[in-house]
Image (cartoon, rainbow, N blue to C red; front, side):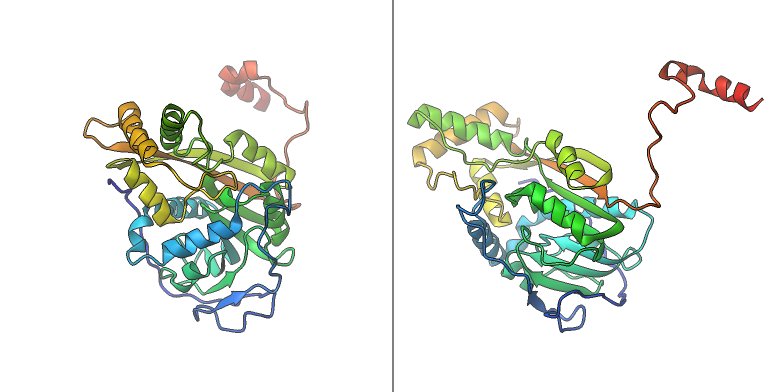
Length: 350
């Protein structure tokens, strides 16, 4: 398997006051404490909501199992790379954030790339307790909180910055999750996140479907459904975010074959947990899918590619100090004048 180059940065220690919002965190920042949120709610079930695609209990078990593997670090390459790219977007915002939240933090793929000049105190939240017990090193004072990303247990107007990397694609009610994030931000606070997009693992999806059609006469979904980029901006706007930025990136990873792709997905804790998933795959179907994968998508060296489409998003909570769009019809030049804009500006100055 050809991994992705990942950047790992270390920063000097820093400390600042953390304005905490619930009483269960009684330990000093960076002490390694894990707290259950006081707003803990039961795991979502099949009957809770019509917007219930994923089995959250299954996802929690998958992440706990993956983090308990003896060499779990060798499966972190994708999350480390995307975490660093999320932080690069934070660095583009020239500001210091006193208090930040990392939703679905995992081992701390975002935290390891941050520095104290950008974030002074960090709260990390994840659904799986095992990943919180073995975080990567960071010099920023942190609190780790065991809580469901679908039910954030924080008061309104708490955080200056909210981050999330490769977690929100497992949330059932994404519009509600965005509204919770918006509510938890202070005015003029910013949300920077990344999630898997709809074209992720299309090679694996197509190969499995074609193999099942040929061997079993029909197919079931084996790859989780993901959000389309065309919907993301609308969802953020409906949640109340302004000055939106949404962009797409693709990361291509080469593997020896389909079995290595699926093994790494398990090791990442990224296996399918949709309620509609098929529990077992027949051996003949898997062998056929492996052949289809190599025939349709294989590289010249015998390896197969797997595409991870990453959707990055930035949204701001409104504040009176933010720039406002000009009123409709207030422009002094038309689009047809853009080619001669320098001449027009010179005449205007005279």
